[in-house]
Image (cartoon, rainbow, N blue to C red; front, side):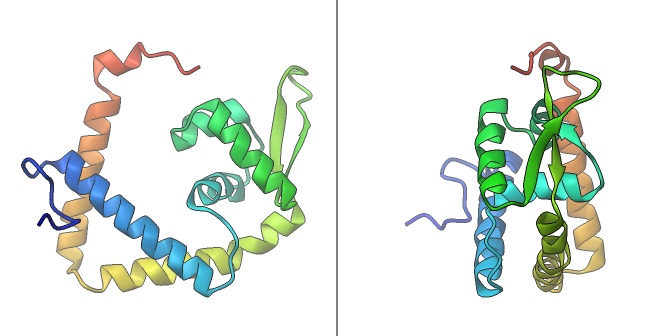
Length: 158
């Protein structure tokens, strides 16, 4: 029987990082549920971008979180229904709305980030600082290698 953390063919950084990301995601979801934070991981990614003080278009948000515009639109609709964000007119470009965080959305930041920080601290506590730094270095280098590869530069974001 295959372990959920093993790759079915052979170990690869892509496969292992995918399994790890999925496991971390499940852990984060459980921590949010335990702390009565009603937000999905995808919505959280949008909120983190907005918590950094940005007013962005859906296209910019899609680019920053690595999702297509249609998916981001659905996620923003969910955040809007919860009154965490709102769409406002872009004074520089009337064709596109900007997504801005509401007061309710701002109020969610501290509790959400505390849960995320505590979850990260717990997970990191099982590894040495050198292991964490080494792993982060490899994953960042892999990500940069892929995103800087010439073939990917020509792909259009739709």
